[in-house]
Image 1 (tube, rainbow, N blue to C red):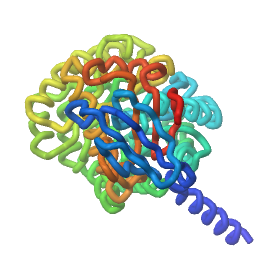
Image 2 (spheres, one colour):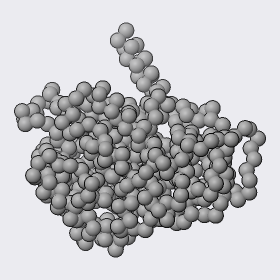
Image 3 (cartoon, rainbow, N blue to C red):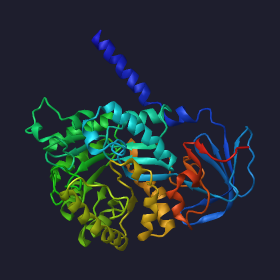
Image 4 (cartoon, rainbow, N blue to C red):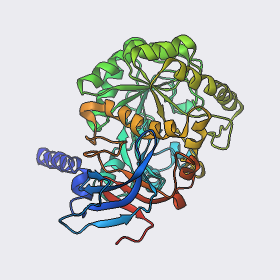
Length: 447
């Protein structure tokens, strides 16, 4: 009997896992025509065009009026801008709204409900896709994909894998030393996973892949908000990193790492990681190495402004100041050596700041033109997401408005290339938000 119940449970979970966004959200969706829209093509806004969406794909782009055999929802663009949905390449779905203390102690049911509410808010800010870099987001992703909850596409990493005393070690001091049968609360809920040898790293990696990870997140250096590991520490050895890389490659995907310093970045690249997240303290030689190896640099515009993550103590504030002082140099080096750069926000423990997620795009114009920023947050970030390869949960082209691409679209009341601040006020500037061919917001009257 126990075996039969187990088999039924596994079968049920498998059935839920294979509900696709298309099956859940667009099976009954009528065609949608955007009439008279100017398209952001990655460089500029085009002359007026018309766009047809059928199912979850862009079917036609034409300067001529579009007619459809089946009745269609028609959206009068009136010369407004149609652009791809935004992508945040560094997001923590479960760490946005709760405080740090709440995230470590509150019931997972509460944190999950908060994450679900934030997921809907994220989508309604125009972010149709996020790369989640550490949280138990598998169930929420399934709920979004099956239409139970509204939210963006999620590329989940699952638990961030950390060494003892590393950036992802959130244990209380009374929980040390660890015992094999007593995992800490963050480990039990899947926020982090502690591993201290290549074999342990390989096992924890496989556990995340088993649950549906689209990429693996390692913490290979200290961080600003680390409970223990200072920012200058180098964490996880090259053999440990390589164990995760090999396990991920066997599943057809890649490893991304949390790292700030040159030493941590070099170890990650030697171990085979494909993406460096953060890296604000990189030096010239390290930036050149990233360029030569084709390593992605997932940078965040960390500055001493109103969007800065708050720090609870003097040590955290000092480390945050060090990181922020390196941000300008990091972007300079990335541009000088031609490193592939991704855009992400890494907003933690502050829902009010998350509401201004789009304002970070305007901050990016400190280093890039508005068109470059928009391309980074759409087509470039989509290229990064595609590194998940065989573990990509949403096969198809994203980040562009092309025939055959997935229909994640925003209708902007204005031209964001001329005024990127429009995306700082999504409630009034984003008139239509579409994800996977389904309209989640329409402030215009459909004909």
